[in-house]
Amino acid sequence: MVALYQDLKYGFRMLAKNPGFAAVAVLTLALGIGANSAIFSVVYGVLLRSLPYPKPDQIVDLREVNAKGGRMNFADPNFEDIRSQNRSLKGVAEYSAWLESVSGGSEPTRSMLASVSHDFFPLMGVKPVLGRGFLAEDQRFGAVPVALVSYGYWKQYLGGTNNLSTLKLTIENQSVSVVGVLPPGFGSRLTVTSGCRASFTNGCPAARRTIGTLWRGCVRASRRPKRAPSFPESLRGSSNCTAKTP
Image (cartoon, rainbow, N blue to C red; front, top):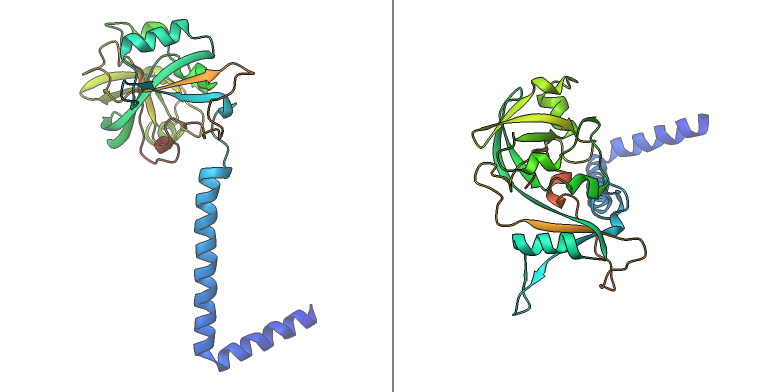
């Protein structure tokens, strides 16, 4: 300890004698540490951090291919055919997301509203930490609109209350009942609502994405497996997110 103290004392004395060199050295260290921290944050978020659901390697993104070889989203009848007739997938589900104003919490937010089919979360292996998930009945025509909210939104804007029966949000000028809270990891202000395909406001947006889960033993056609979508990727780290079911 004595030797360390003497070394530090000597080092500070030398820096004090050469303030210009000291400033350059400190600035260089600061830039190097900052750059390394930024690079690590990106690498961790994109490559190292585990996705917030089990078995992400079994989740695949599905697209139709038109006559010209271009990829496009599934038309409703084709989606239903894939859901009922495929043999390679345990199940398929749809989701879409867009920015929307959400009120009813402690303050209004401009949030990412996501629309998912009622089987989206069971397919992803995700269960609410409070309340219930979506039911097939939630998607029927005329059903009362219901929503799941993210853990972060529930804590920050809904007071973390366990009594969900009193919680209602206003999305696109329509009242939506909160029925469940998602586990941490789906964005800090995410709300997921049910009823898009069944007539929630103006219906689902055209840009619906389709995902599926492979049976164990099935392999992807691609030689290099693609990283599984993260509901979607823009939502996981977003600070301003909301979602609903088609």
